Structure formats: structure tokens, C-alpha cells
Image (cartoon, rainbow, N blue to C red; front, side, top):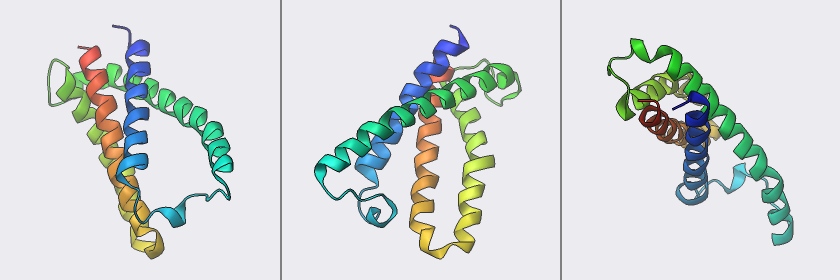
Length: 139
């Protein structure tokens, strides 16, 4: 399969993982970090405007992850590709970027520690869903 198609499918998976994490899992205690709409209609308008942006970014993320995975999968511990290789690649990227960034900023910003923890786990799930799909499709 072409890495572009795999990347788009991985991006869709990342989008839905992100939606579940922020819409269903991280709901308590996050009210102070979001933008609060005055009315339900304003909330719907805000969601309608932001969902396409989030979807576009997720698709771009999926494309970049698939491109990098296709180029670098020969150097992974899991040989031969597949879902575990995709998850290994995604987890390594997460560890080197998102994990260290959120842990590092959590040292200095006490008031954002809850948001940092949510971001930490949300990105791990998002990256592993996309990595699993891309690894499965590019085997």
C-alpha cells in the first residue's frame, strides 16, 4: 500500500483517538483549560469551526508519521514491519518529543500539571493508534 493512503488512514485513526481521549476520558477537572462558551449555540459554533482544523492537523500528522516510518522502518528493533513496528516507531517519537516536553514543562508550570498529564497520555494513545494502523497497512 502507498504510504500516503496509509498516512491518511492513520491520521483518521489519530483523530478519533484524540476525540475519544479529550471528549470521553479527560472530562473532569479540565474545565478551567478550555474556552467556555456562554451558550450551547456558541459552543456548537466553536466546535464546528475547530473540528475541521483538528481533522486537518490529524491528517497531516498521519502523513508525516507514515512518511518517516516508511523511510526509517529498516532500523527498528521489530524487523519486517507490521503493527508492532509501527507502534515501536510511534512510541520512540513520542518519547523523544512529547513525553520529554510535557515532563519538562511540568517541572516549571505547577498550575498546568493536570493538563500536561492529560497531554502526555493523549499523545501516547494517538501516536500508537496511528502507528498501529500505519504499520499494519505498510507491511
